[in-house]
Amino acid sequence: MKSFFIFVVFMSTVIPVQSQASIDSVKAAVNQLFTAMKNADGVMLKNSFTDSALLQTIVTNKEGKIIVMTESIAGFVDFINKEAPGNADERIVFESIKIDGPLAMAWTPYEFYYKAGFSHCGVNSFQLVKQAGVWKIQYIIDTRRKKACQ
Image 1 (cartoon, rainbow, N blue to C red):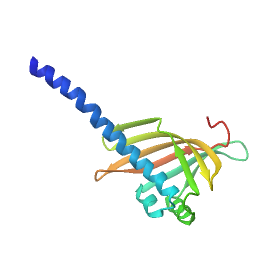
Image 2 (image 1 turned 180 degrees about the horizontal axis):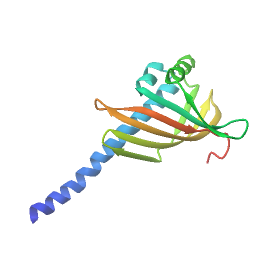
Image 3 (image 1 turned 60 degrees about the vertical axis):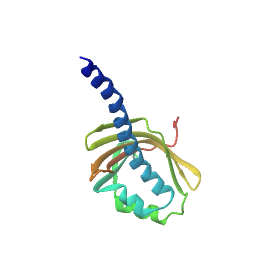
């Protein structure tokens, strides 16, 4: 009985540490994307994604209809590569992270600043996949608005 009690106490202290390490590694993968954007580093940006990654945005068109726009990762990398460092500054808050084996989800409200001026805000929803021990972004979908950011 004493051995069982020691095992339960040990496992209750080990599991949260492992979980926090996993959460921190997911945060690091997402933060890599925003560091690459801010530094105008296209190579680092490209390395943040899987080879089959998808980037989408939910917007309201001129007719007031909600649509989902798909952007190419290559186009996004090209845009960032042409910017001066500091021009693309997205500031996020990690609100939720969920992990199941090689799959992770991160929910991050954000504010985006372009050339030091406020551009827009919204929420990013990330899906990440752990490949060869490294978290990579497989999918991002976000919302964008100019008001009601807080």
